[in-house]
Image (cartoon, rainbow, N blue to C red):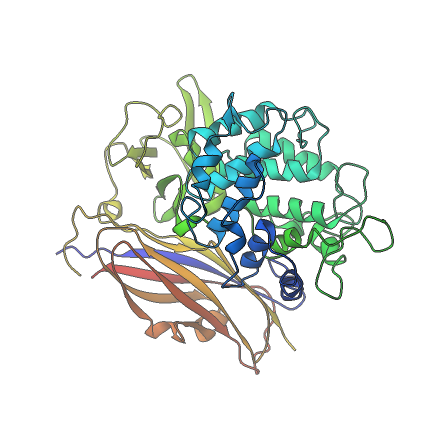
Length: 516
């Protein structure tokens, strides 16, 4: 019998002393308390869910208030975030209704761009980011990008930070690579209008405000960029946003006393930003839109995920951010050629080979148009020769974990083995010695065989000694996971009061899965 193992490598990062955590969690619970006092709407609902609140009231979403495409889009996003179906939750099928707004290759009002942006995100939240309506809207957004790289609320309107951020988020959701010129130009525009206080105003030259800070932060999250890296005079949009929080938990639009129109209407967006989220907040039923792609290097799995795309080569571009790898595409007389992923460069008989549903297409990756249910395998090796570990179904994935410590079986030949771990990053926040923090991993067995799970830990001693899985030491962890099933796995870092070591720590958690 052949016994296959699936290996999921979970990267561990431990950050001590004075370095800030990945996402700012300070003030979120207070802001959530403030939001709970308000009349709910789709944005407040999404913010509450993003903050970690459960059992959020949803009755207000049973009908849509308004008749615009954006009214349906934001309602769909809120319902999907809550884990309900936007097609059946309300008095009509909201998704089908949104699609009826497609008009002359754009969605909603032809004079506006924001309805195209939010329609894409709403469709993406139900696994339809590559649907015809979303792709038409994507093309319309790109075609109407201003020369400065930004977008405005309306077609041909002056660029502003809020709609430029929304444009970035929408294009990524529609499958546009983070390295695409449309997104890099939009990022350059945003960077050019950042104020000296680290924050952002509505447009260049305007004072920083909480809404603009939040939208830029949310866009950076969508691209996998840490807002902490966008510093100006040692100040970031995160640090500026936090200066606007009031004692009741709400976030003022601008500094108190500077505007007669000041209010706290931007609080929902601030919460989403500080929670490290982007849009969609969540997808209905755990829907994973796009196409499954697995990238195998010479010695290990580089990526095993689902991403959007139109052609096979798009998946490489879009998976790079999600799986944190680098790539190089060379223009040749025969068309674009995938020359390199990470440190593995095509040379001689070895190169990057791709298969669709385990078969070699007659065209290159840049020309192959993806079809429903296509499964993509990219591996480094020789054409027609699959490495043995790929034949045997061995895969591995990486998930980042981060924390700040304050020193005060059977033959499965021919079976489908798809085992994933998410999210890509777990942020434990700040931990004092003598305390612990918990986070949850989602394990998904999307293959056709039942699995038996175990774990191993490598790297710094802090992980080897103090990491727990399912309330026990990682060495004793064992679990069975049926095919086509998901399971939550609680990971806990329990730091003893005697722990004194400081500095950045690294390690890896390997989740092993063997066919049962």
